[in-house]
Length: 142
Image (cartoon, rainbow, N blue to C red; front, side, top):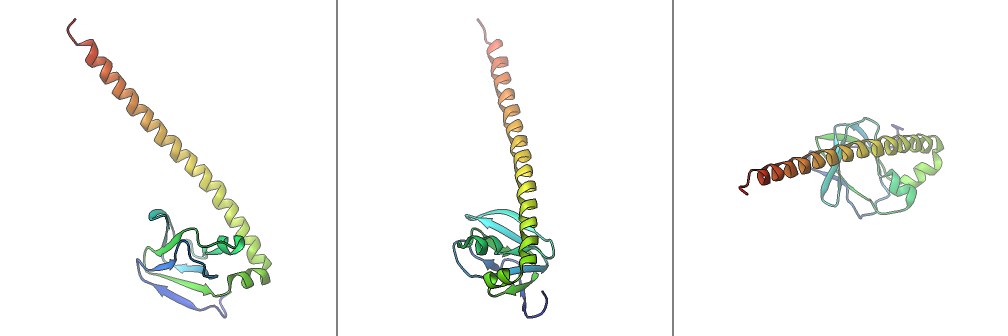
C-alpha cells in the first residue's frame, strides 16, 4: 500500500475530514493521534498505526459522519479515489470489515459498561439525596 499513495503531515488541530462533506478520500494513519468529533463534541481519539478514516462513508456512499482532527502532529497516507481503491482491493475491504466488526463489538460493550456505571452513580446520588431528606424530616419538631 505504500507505493503510489502520498504522505501528508498535519499539525495538532488541523482538520483531515469534515462532517457533512464528501471527499472520496481515505486516510491511513502512519503516526500520531487523531480525534473524532461528532456535532462539535469530541468522541474518541485514535493512535493505532494503520487505522483508516473515511472508509465507512465510501462503503455507504454518504457524506462524512464525523470530523477527524489531528490531536497531535501526525503523518498519514492519502488515498485519493477511495471507492476505486476498495473495489480493486478486496483483501483490504475484508480487513476493514473485520476491523469495523471489532470496533462495533467492543465499542458497544464499552458504551454499555460506561452507561451502566453512570446510571449507578446517578442512582447512588439519588439515594443519598433521599436519605438526607428523610434524615432532615426526622429531626423536625413535632
